[in-house]
Amino acid sequence: MKRNWRLIASLVLIGAIWALISPLTKIAVIGGYRNFGIIFWSSSIAVIVLGTIIAIRGSTLPVNHGAVVRYVFVALFGMTLPSAASYTAAEHLPAGVISVCLSLGPLFSLPLAVILGLDRATWMRVLGLVLGLVGVLLIMLPETSLPDPTKAVFIPLALLAVLAYAIEAVGLGRMGRAGLDPIQLLLGASIVSVLITLPIALSTHTFILPSLPFGLAETAVIFSGLANTVAYVGFIWLIGRGGPVFAAQVDYLVTGFGVIWSMLLLGETYSIWIWSALIVIISGLFLTQPRPGTDAEQTSPTKIPSDSK
Image (cartoon, rainbow, N blue to C red; front, side, top):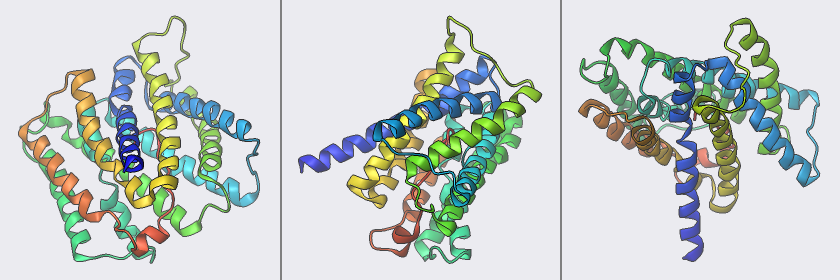
């Protein structure tokens, strides 16, 4: 029983830490940071932290063809593309709304997994997908759902990030990790992400070189990168201790805490439509989660979270 409570407490803590990323990103955006600049610094922080872990363990980072292909794949679909989309959306949408949208992974990943034969659909999971769609409509359609109704056009941008995450998860399920452990995979992907985003940030003038003393925006970027890396390592630990199905429940906590942190740190308030969408989407998420002993539990890849998760 004591072990179970420890695992539950760890799950809650990981969800709370991961949920900080959306409001911290919003603070960075308000402070002048933009998409590729934020991705570069977040990936750089991940390289430092994960590289230190690899060094302490005395292991190495494989650079064979199969490993490099997977580094590039995760860097593109798990970091650069979704983060660029969600960070751009953060310039126009409340952070809490983005947190709700980013919980819609099953809306995209389950159909892709079914098409590729990696998972199977049941009527309950299909109902979960329908609820997810209803939740999106509750955010987009009512004129009183967002503080500025004209910003609803940026919701698809946040959903584009979710689609990229789904492609990453399903793609890894299809190709496997080629013997890489999750920390090696994320470290390699973070290195590739740094190499991709630095020239893009420089050419698009979204690169900012922080200067001392750090302001609120710089502090937000640093803590966002640390939160993502720490939560990721904790998530991997949780999978090993509690199993993938138990660890997957972190999605509920990330969504809920994302809204709570946005209210506390940014003073955001939400209409009845947003609260209704949150309830409907979490219900749909519950229905689409894999159950113990299902094929999905056996075939789903280890989740590779990103900066926007």
